[in-house]
Amino acid sequence: MGQSIFVTGTDTECGKTQVTCALLRGYADAGKTAVGMKPVASGAVKTADGWHNDDALALQAASAIRADYDTVNPYCFEPAIAPELAARDASVAVDRQRVAAAHAQLASAADRVLVEGAGGWHVGVGAADGAQWRDWVAAFNWPVVLVVGMRLGCLNHAQLSAEVIARDAHLLGWVANVMPPAMPRLDDNLALLQQRLQTPCLGVLAPGGACMQVAALEAALPVHASK
Image 1: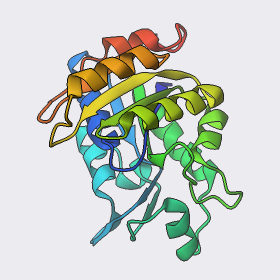
Image 2: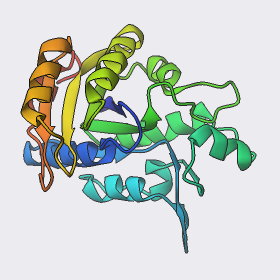
Image 3: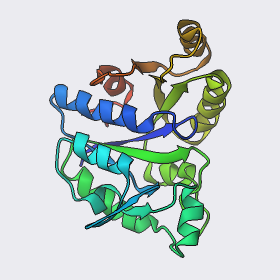
């Protein structure tokens, strides 16, 4: 069964999907089979096959194996609002066992499963018990990659996120996502984050970047998990 890695972000729209897709392509370049997963998504369009989310479709397209959409994205809600609110409005309780079954199916077919969250670390998943991503990541024992959207405010958001994630889970490191337009003093902000965050920078993704080298991420994985 493949090792899974959870990808979270400092907040919404910080580039989690771009980074996850770049990592998926990077794994393909490195000769490893990787597949993306978006357990819960909000913001979708109606298709002939049901509600589909653009981020989940991007992960599906970037994956090395072709998995059914409902396996990649077990829970998909129409409105682009917080997942827990979308689930409540739809009278749906997100079931961790259903997500676990879909995840196990993906993990059985791939070397790596990259699981992308929705929003940030403290966002609720829409479960009946009020669980947040932090609770599910702890239950699944997934190591974590933090995506930092490089924009004004990222210094505070990144440090706060990294501190709390490290208390809850195994934080492997962080990826800087350079968002257009490039923020003023980008290089200086990157340098400050590299000095202040206690985990390594696993890469910098710039606009137009086709893939990322995954050697740093593999090196950060526990020895037993990187085999």
